[in-house]
Image (cartoon, rainbow, N blue to C red; front, side, top):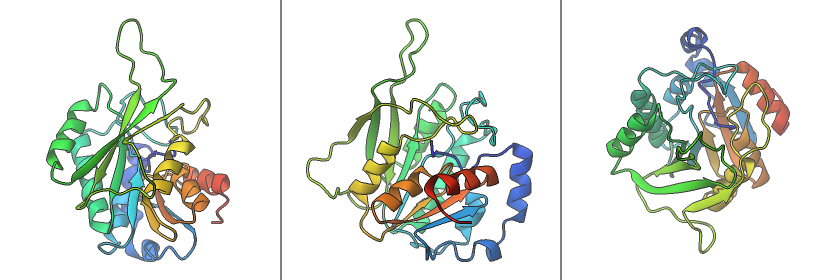
Length: 250
């Protein structure tokens, strides 16, 4: 975002370790209740999800950090995971466990992560039920004669076929990218994209979990379409920004 992607693991490495040590079951014990329309939890998603029962949400929709290595997207996160394969594998495995419906992970293939991304698709080959492509109508052009990276994957995991709420839903969505983003988080998902997924693939009252909540794009989409949302975000600064953007009280 996790783009409001996007990430929940958005904090420096030292701060990550400190946060992980402080997250306990008491703090997150109500995370699966979703009594409010939007529940934002400031914590490490790996620790928080372990406190959640099996099949406690209706869908997981998220966009983890893409491991760009350049550290040019987040003020609160060092985007250099050494073992990105295990990072993704553990996040997907826990997401599948807590979801009674589908799990959707948005990942953009790049020079640094493509090997791990393709390994993930092989590892979960029997759980992938669909791959939806987000085509960008105005992507950042590549230098010289290099191929411009104009799409992102939305990988759908689950046990059953994916069904849309409407007819003739294609597995490609085309939009422009955000023309501007806050300096604190330059990887915010296009709101139209999150809206499309929430509208097409969830129902009224569903609970949607976003373990890499970022600035709350998933939460905004959930509110718009009458769904509930649990957002987990490691950075307290991003939690505060998300609350302000989608008007959720602390």
